[in-house]
Amino acid sequence: MLAVALISSATFAQDSASAFNKWSVELGGGLTKPSSPLAPGYRVKGMAPYQASLGVRYMMNEKVGLRATFGYNDISGDDEGGFLPFETKYYRASLEGVVNLRNVLGFNDFSNSFGLLFHGGGGYSSIDYQEPVDLDENDSAFNLVAGITPQIKLGNRVAFFADVSLISNVGMERSWEGTQLITSNNRRIDDGLLYNVSAGFNIYLGKNDVHADWYSKEDAMMSEIEELQERLSKVETDMIDTDQDGVPDYLDREKNTMSGVAVNTKGIAVDKNNNGIPDEIEPSLDARYLNKNDYNPNSNSTSGSSTVKDLLDKGYVNVYFEFNSTRPQTYSLEAINYLKVYMNENPSATAQLIGYADELGDATYNTNLSEKRAKKVYDILVASGVSESRLSHTGSGEDTSVDKGSSEARQLVRRVTFKLN
Image (cartoon, rainbow, N blue to C red; front, side, top):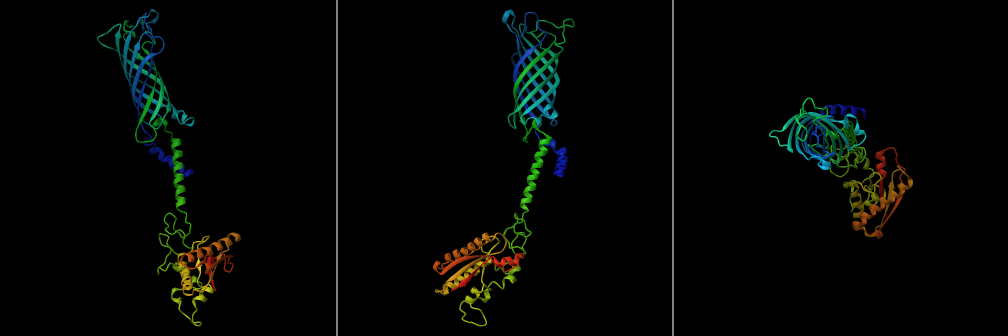
């Protein structure tokens, strides 16, 4: 785990900048409040509608960025209580630095959906007095902006924000309604202030799933580690070799190869003569399995060579099974065929099918398994046309006649034998 974390840390130092989207468009609007100067007889009561803004932001990393903002304020006076109405249009363009306080202060540990931005900068303002004065040229000023922007993440592409900003307009020549010139004698420290309260949406642009506003190196690193762990787990699963033939399951086309036999690169047991018997076990089966060259169903000899009945009765012809299975080994199907041919050629003959299991596992379980193996061969013979009345089946449980520590020997006792009457 530590090694994975160190590798991930080194990778993040190079790749984190490309792990998140950097561009966003901000659309907002709301209320505005101008501070002094206002000439006697004019006022703005409380916050008044309306103001709007459009911002384009670029984040250099997950903590800091730049924003270009274009704003418009419609500043209207209150005509109640004997005050005079007025209307002024205010335009501004600003370039601001942005700090993602969520990542700077660690808010990502607090919530996955709450963010906080701080922005500040400056730009140019144009003030158009429309009522009660209408000047030929707009007033101009240099603006200084500072604000705080809480955010709620709505999705990977959009967030809702609220914003409170203070805009200072340095160098205004007239009061907000335009009727009074500002001179050095009557200028105040808060001249040209605007308070904006906004709400709106951040729209995130880019191909990544997350924007810098919501990106966390720690979270991304943990996600990367989890992904690496999942990949490692998959590799471990892929490398499982059920039949222990040296070929992992995901490449193995024969996942139930008999233990100990040679296989090719695809996990298939080597069978050069294509007789369905793995080459390595043919010698060990010679004592228990009837070779095709020895089979002569018409032989009446009682000396020199065994009759088919003798071979079946004495256990030379058996049906062998995979470990803990009722599925006959492929090569054993020929043994079932020998009995079928014999039964067809001897209509009066009957056969008893006796199943066995090796000593591995619970004895009661193995008895049941031996019965199921005998029943499986019984079902195959009946399906091949042998009458049920001529067959019987039973399980004899564990065969203890071989060394239970030898996998090859255990293969010889996982079988069904035949007794003819």
